[in-house]
Amino acid sequence: ATASVALARRRHLLGDHAGAERAALAVPTHAQGALVGARAALANDRLTTAFRFLEPFVNGLFPIPDASVAGSTAAVMATVLARGRRFPELGRLAGGLVEAPNLPAEMMPPTARAAWTSGLAAEAWDRFSGDDPWQVAARLELAVLAGDIGLASRLFEKAGPLGGVSAPALSLLRGDLQERPAAAAEKVFGAGVIVHIWRTHPFRWQPWVEAARRTSADVSVFDLGAGDIPEIDAIPQVVLDDGSLIQMLQPVAGTVEAHGSGVWIDSKLCAGAGVDREWPQAETDAARHGLPAASRADDAAVQVLAADKSLRNAVDGRPTVAIAPPGDPFWAGPLPERVWPALRVVRFNAKAGWSGAGEKVVAAATSLLSLADR
Image (cartoon, rainbow, N blue to C red):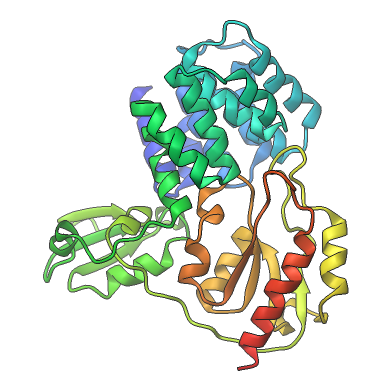
């Protein structure tokens, strides 16, 4: 069981979500295996499978070994319910956790995440208002989800060692990049060094992957999820995942490849992010009212798309407005617009929600139209 869970976790971390599901199915009554399987199924947008992984543990059919795993299970189940728009069940799950009088300390940060997903962020903030490090870590989770870098930075300092898990998210929110390759990175990507890079996402880290390819090292890139693996006798000296490159190399900025006319606005811009975080049709109507329309996406000078869809366009240099999913520090921070000049990002506001987002889409698309006209 331990080996199966480790295999599932490794495949998931390297972007092979289907392989992670298969490995997790070998241990269906193992809480940690089910948790990895559910996360992998979510990454492949297989909500029913994700629910089946977790439901026996949430309902008490199988035991959960400790409070930390229980908290993670609840947080992932909250995401599954939100993505499936099962909001009444989501409210009961998160509300019960927030109101639990004897909630184990280890469950506080994941409970805060579940509460945020269910629209109970304010209640969770009040519930975890103490100075105990676990409560500070729970508030830190809420600040990161809200994209509030100032508040998150202050809470990170107060949380001590418990804040370490949030360090990568804070780096993304700040947009931290290396001023120059560190000495270690220069050795890693030196002449003749054989480097294997594993993709965890098909497009997100492409500017850093391209930077690695331009170094003096012998760099090969593999996508385990697509069945792309090295030959058995290809022995690297260094193995990295693509997301780790952000701390080692300056990204190669994208280009702008503009053509067409008008603006195409997709019908699905942000759904399943949580209670009160669904993209409103009224904001789409406001955006369409203020922009020249294109008859087809392929004919448009600018496309307005959900975040994941927008990345393929960004890599190709096509002018695109991305609707950022709430709670994702990569999209909440400045990096996407910094590395892709043909991309503009419209973000959820923790206080105002999506109110006024249609006007922001108009402003972003107009700036891209002027870019395309140059």
